[in-house]
Image (cartoon, rainbow, N blue to C red; front, side, top):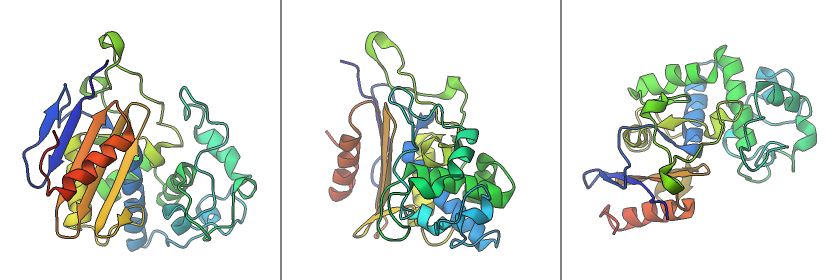
Length: 278
């Protein structure tokens, strides 16, 4: 069986790596990307570049009037489905480029599953639309606005949509071959396409959720009681990042294995006051 490289960072113990993982190599972070997209939204609102309650069509004129706001997109209450129509299995987001998103925007009112604001339904599509709206408001590509409004103010640099292949870590497969990652550099990027080093994820978690250097946490964070957290999973990588109200925090990243197990490991670490898993 292929090994499952593991990296654990926390406030109570030295970094732990195993089976070839590393704190300083770029790995897929999946939907933890949404934390950065949501933070960009709140930062741009604070700068007066937009309002979180702006309708989508203000910044994406191709969209009809749907009642969907940027806040709805960030809070997963837009009524949009989880995935863009037409996604496949092998490399589901590869066809979903900027042109595909533009075509979809014109029929946004026809693909909603319920009116906006009524019910939370986790939506990668919603965050793709949100990222495009932020780019429209900023007059700059998503990656550029992310650096300007989030990464540079936090002094975090090891985050990229396209890291050098020599600095990446991929899940090991059979016969020692790296498993191929999904293509997520198109319109889905703001929902789950970023790569980062585990130590950069830890810096983001601490500076956003514990130290709160950029103000109150963005609506993209998940909240369970006193726990502020977000996870992320692609086909062959998963991450859990969580912090408690008293300042404890943990980041778990794994290459391969079940994402549910990564989440469970992170929660168990926080419950056990950060002691390392066996």
